[in-house]
Length: 150
Length: 107
Image 1 (cartoon, helix red, strand yellow):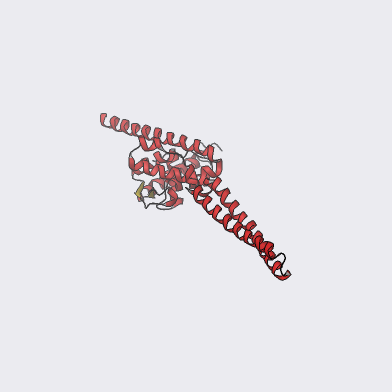
Image 2 (image 1 turned 45 degrees about the horizontal axis):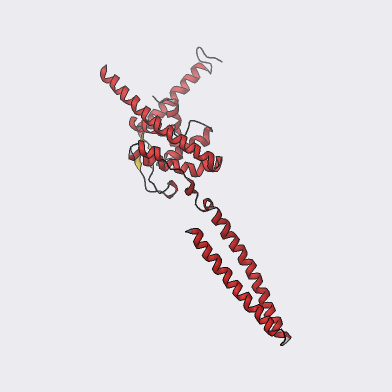
């Protein structure tokens, strides 16, 4: 979607500038045999048009580079799916855990370790949270049982 | 009586201020003492402290930096502050008695 939009912008920009340049060049050719002043004016216009084309080229280049790196715009696009937490923990806890994991993934892990390692850490922590939650629940139940048994 | 991890997390929660999220508490902990226990471990400890009544939490507002989700916001309770002070006092007393020239001290 984004790529298509950028392509449209690029093609319309390029088309406009090329049309302008074509007009000036034809005017130079037309006035070539006419007065020297007219020829000079149209040639100056053509030169200005070329400069505009180059300037727009820079804009187009920036658009292209951004299109090639979608993560530069939206780091959340790379955030892994916390399916394990969502599937195994109670919804109210899962919501909190996912929110915190996503926040930490973007602000710390991705910055400090890079995208690939950050994903590994993310999945490892997902697993760890689930395991420690159920171990904690088991321990609490055991403590309660032993308390009542006494 | 608080465990060591619980004590550290209570102190971090105190430094992070009221209504701080798990991630903020962990960030505070990491910024103060460097590499510590894993991020995943903090949730169990926070839940345990909440069950003991040392921390209270409420589900806050939806936050953009948390992926448009509402994380839980933790605040230390009065009981929590008392337990923390008591725990620190006990550690300090042990340190004085054993390391700093008390009866049977190591130094």
